[in-house]
Length: 229
Image (cartoon, rainbow, N blue to C red; front, side):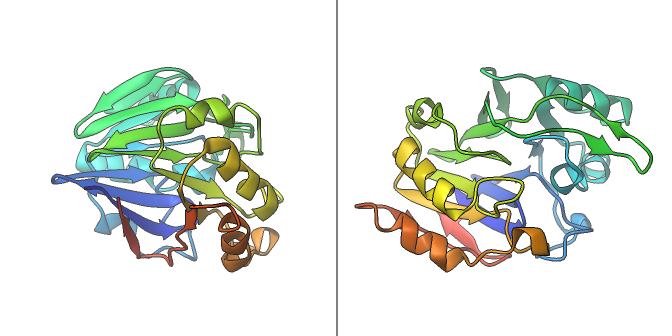
């Protein structure tokens, strides 16, 4: 069994069989965060792309815990230069093993760079993540628009899809609901909304759109809440 805990924005914790994985742990500067970075100790960190609201507290957490950090190539290389000993650069199509599961990097349509206070660094490409852990397969779309190859991602045999709905920088509710159809998944969790005014959304609107599709369930999690798969 896999527990998916929402930490706010696009940050999640996955827990199964005594293993913990953090996804996009943006916590300290996240007004929606359910916990602080010092309150989690993942063995693995998975990153979708380099934007500050996804890399978040990765460097501090990884240095404290020794976590393996799996990210796209340029981001992984940059993290290594910041002293993250467990940085594991990868690329689209690649599957990487971690303690407790695997992650396959798949395409996403977005931008990707980290702002260090003076410059945009760690240029590269974004990714989605197909995570297999605790007997479940979960797709984290990351920040993306709707695209037709989501149908191919759906062929991975997904149990859950985690999709952004904020609009402006990613899909909005209508496109995200169509993504559910493309993916052929029966359970969806929305994220990347209400952290700032530009991505203000009512998740119940998304839920209604999704659940018009036969047999599909939308699980809206408040920060700190979990869903069991």
